[in-house]
Amino acid sequence: MIKVVRGNPTPEELAAALTVVRARAAAAAAEPSGAQEAGDSWSDPSRIAGRRLPRPGPAAWSRTYWPG
Image 1: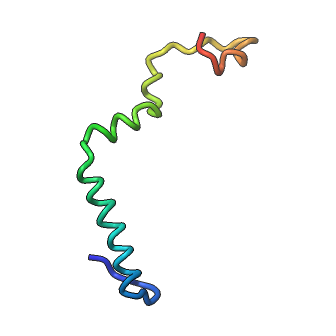
Image 2 (image 1 turned 45 degrees about the vertical axis):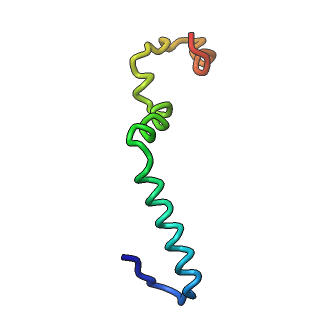
């Protein structure tokens, strides 16, 4: 159920907003469940947790971006 809490939209404005909401809901329902997880896995910090990090030392700042 959608309820207008502020303003006075015209029937056309309300229909346009409802169309957008329904289209987004249909697209989310049609998307396979594994597709969202695959897209977000690259930014998951736990994927690099298994890698050993360089030990801190005088030149540690130079190894902070490029893997050793």
